[in-house]
Length: 474
Ligand code: LEU
Image 1 (cartoon, rainbow, N blue to C red):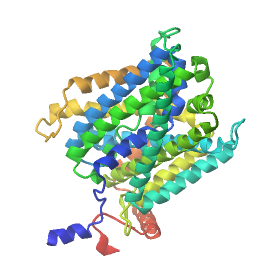
Image 2: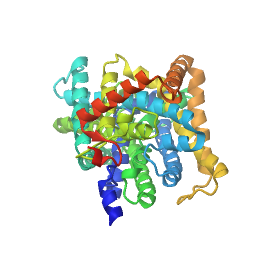
Image 3: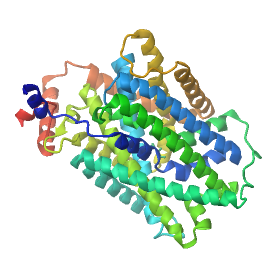
Image 4: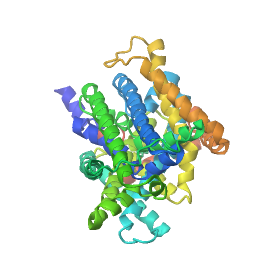
């Protein structure tokens, strides 16, 4: 009885998410803007339609292999923060901090800003039919989208997962409509574009085509970030991963096939909103529904990124590698409000950067490299800690294949574009002074410690948040 009461009093994130919520978190995070904008990026670098379809299929399989490895890691190390927790457990605090830094400070907020911008551009498309929407208006609307979702995520985890569910169904519906139209087109004999003509053979462009494809599949590891909130994770995590990754791969490949039944390679290359061009050709007056669906899709993806990324901040703070305020949970709503707000503020900061697409290129290779490093934890832990309980044990063939794939997609572009790589390396290196100043330096002068402490208390009062198990102190 006492224990129950103790459990009741403890302020912590509760496992509220079911299998279906888990699937929608993954599918809803993966499907965002990529399937609507990446087809041109993939085609540009492969040269032919059939080679593009192969890249889309292989990217899906590659993501599935990664996700399968993450199922072993996630059920073995059941901690929020995923990659960060695995690297911490395997390689220690410094590499884990570097991973946390790249992901929290650059990759996630940048991706969120990009997806939010795609949202606002599609929302405004029906108003600005013949021209590009004004840049500032797009950024402002993207900020509004982030603010609304920040409120939802601070208010109730249930609401956040409900938003995720509804928008996932909406985006799947949009893709199913496109696929059905594609099947109809195929039955009418429209398959003239499916050839290998003009396929590029340079290794570099092949690697770059995978960058575009993999961006669209990115998000398959997001459920691992919030595993502490998933009910029965040993059963639900692997099931959710398997169902979502298969679904997304099939849907993405079929959607691309549908695009190519109707649009020529030249038309795809010339369009930065492929789905809209497709709909304009086939759906007549109903074409307007597609930008609406794309807007819904990206809105849901922003929610997925916010929901999962805030837990990364939270996990980092719980390990003493982020400010203490981020470990705190809103006393009445039981949501990690400070982490959600931190993520939202950073994303809005990136909305003010003039060329955020360039920024994400700089860190693209770091992103895949660090996911590869997390997969490396799997064989490493098998070797170093063979007795850890592993509810799922994958064949070592899979992590090794994934790591080889990672080496290909990171090393080749590194050699081909040293400038982007240099910028990426600089961003990674910026974590070193931060680590030594704020984390490794433990005996800071008293005035600095008390200043940091008063700031935490001030923010704590402002946000009405408390640390884990400290309800009585409120
Ligand atoms: N896969 C997502 C998309 O296509 C992006 C990712 C960074 C969540 O928009």
